[in-house]
Image 1 (cartoon, rainbow, N blue to C red):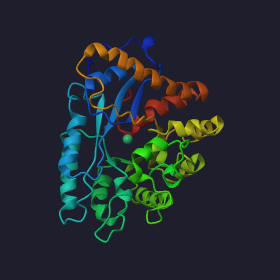
Image 2 (cartoon, rainbow, N blue to C red; image 1 turned 180 degrees about the horizontal axis):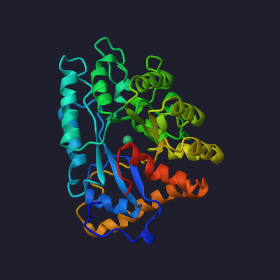
Image 3 (cartoon, rainbow, N blue to C red; image 1 turned 30 degrees about the vertical axis):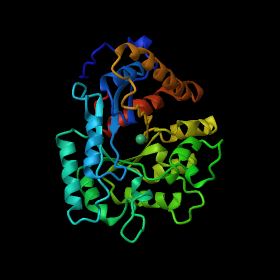
Length: 335
Ligand SMILES: [Zn+2]
């Protein structure tokens, strides 16, 4: 049974894609009814609406999560909530107890389907001596032990694209991102962890907790190394990867190489976009919505063409990627 949208969905033949989908990675803080118009147009049945910590204090995280949860009540089967927890208080004696209490509430009351750990762990968070604190730090272990007991799904975004460690050049893929967020551009900064070091900590965490299924976001920060990504997934049976905000990296690779990767790892890759509409995108004027929806849908359509026409992935592989892998992982009935 799916929740009823206010307006009927487009007829199937009018939809942008004939494949039903779960978007495993979005951040939608604004108008949920308006955003559903886009999702209906794209044949997206459900989204995982993800919170993240951003070095936030508990009340800041709560405020962001209120935005993510706000307006979802009529559509509980379409907006799935992925929670997070504060990381800045890791040194306090009651840290684990407080963080677990928050997660307990999120899973029971807010029906969270997963938890996200963001790259502030490893890339921003430091201890009192000024050393970086990584995701496999023992001070987080009580939380992961709790998550492991619950057989939870945990999203990990534990590093940046390799461009963070390369010169910032106008023709580079991530030029605008690192121009806007120079704090994450670490080229030439020898006092910062390397990409390899961040991924070693991530891999150690994944190995430590075999009953947690880890969705390693953004192609597991290995978009530059498809063979390495396949090897990572094969070495870690509890690891998955989503494509959020990394389709552009795939498109820069030879088609045959990407096609082979999707075939080889077809049970472990989730379709995710990282769609993060600004809360004020749709505004109050409903007459403006159709044009906004059409524009966004057109941009997504180009993404579908890549998988469905340029790569021409076989239908069973597409169905797993778009829908079935996420449904199985999150314990959902396929729509
Ligand atoms: Zn994201």
